[in-house]
Image 1: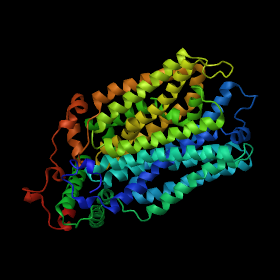
Image 2: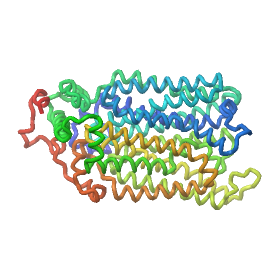
Image 3: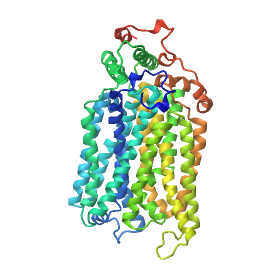
Length: 543
C-alpha cells in the first residue's frame, strides 16, 4: 500500500482504491496547477530580461518612475485580469461540459492566448501582449475551478487532501521550471536576442499540449455523471477509479451518499435555475458561512505578500542585496525549488496527517515571521541596495538572513495558504454548489491577485520597501487569528459528511466543527445496516 506513513488514515479504505487509474487522474488534473505557476514565474522573470525591456520600452526615459511601474504591472497582471473572467465562467462550463471537456476547452484558450503573446515579439506591439495574455488568462483561470473540483470528486476521503494538493504543488513545479528556464536563457542567449524570453515562454505550449493529450484517457467524475442523471456510467466510472466491482460495499456506499446528498439538495431547491443557485448561496445561512470562508481565505492569502514575491522575485532578491542579473535569476530559481519541495512535502506528509488547520497555523506563522524579519532588516539597513556603500560583515550576515527568510516565506506559504486556498473551496460546498462555489472563490482569488500585481510596484515607491513588508506581515498575522476562529477541520471526512459541520451555530463551526459526528453511509459503514445495502446498480439509480 502506498504512503505507509498514512496507514492509520487508510484503515477503512480498501487498498484496491489506490490504483493507477486514480493516480493517473490525480497526475493529469494536478498538473493543471502548472498553468498558473508557469505564468507567474515566466512573466516575472521575462520583464527583467534586457531583450524584453528594450522591445517594449519598460525603462523608457521619457516615462516617469510611476509610469514605468504601471507599464510593468499592466503586463504582469493581464493574465490575472483574464483569469477573473475564466473563474467566473468556469463553474458554468465545468457543470455544462463536464470536467474533461472543460479541460479541453481551457487548454485551447491557453495555447491561443500564449501564441498571440509570443507573436508580438516580431512587432513589439504592446497591444498584442495585453490581448494574448488576457486570453491565456481566461483559460488559466478555469484551471483553478476545473482541477480542484475534479480531484476532490474522484479521490477517496483518506487521500483527498493529498490529491487536491497535487494541484497546488504543480503551481510550484511550473514556477520552478519557469525560473530555471529564464535563468538558463539569460546565460546562453544574448541580451539582444528575443529568444531570451521566447524560449522559456514556450513551456506554456508544452504543458497545455501535454495536459490536453493526457485528458483524453482520464475518467470522467462519477459525481458529475450522477448529477446529470447518467447513473450507470457513473457507477462504471467509480468502479474503475476504485478498482472494485460495482456491487462492492465501498462503491455502493459512496454512490448512496452522492445520491442522498443530491436528492436533499433537489428537494431543498426544487430544481431552481442558475440564478436560483446564487440565491441559495446568499440566503441559506450555512452557505453564507461557506462564501465567507471562500472570500476571506482568498483575500488574506493574496495580501499576505507571498504571490508578490513569486511574481517579482528578482526584485525582492535585489532589494536584499543580490547583485547581477544572472545571480538574481539563479537565486530566484533556487526559490522555485524551495517552494516546489515544500508543496510536495506538505501534500505528502502534512495535509492529511496533521490536518488542515495545523498546517495553516505552522505555515502562516513561518510566513509572518519571515515577512517581519525582512521588514525590520530593511528599516535598519536602508543602504543594502546601494552599490557605492561597502557593507560591514554584520550587515552582510543580516542580508544573508533576509535571503533565507525569502526562502522560508516560500516554505510557509506552500505549507499554509497556498494548499488550503484550493483544498478548502473544493471541500466545503455540497455537490450542487461545488462548481459555482469554487468559481466565486477563484474569481475573488484572481481579482485580488490582479490588484496585488498592479499595486506592488507602486507600493514599493509610495510605501517604501520596508513599509510594504510591514503591511504584508500585518495581514499574515491577522490571517492566523481568522483561521483559528472560523476554519473547521475537514481532514478524513467524506465530501457528503461536511454538511453536518455547517449545521452548527456559526460561532462554533471553526473551533468545534472538527469534532462533529458524521452519519453518512460511507463513514459509518454498511455493516449492520442492511436496509441501506443495495444489491445492484439499478437500486442505486432509483435512490
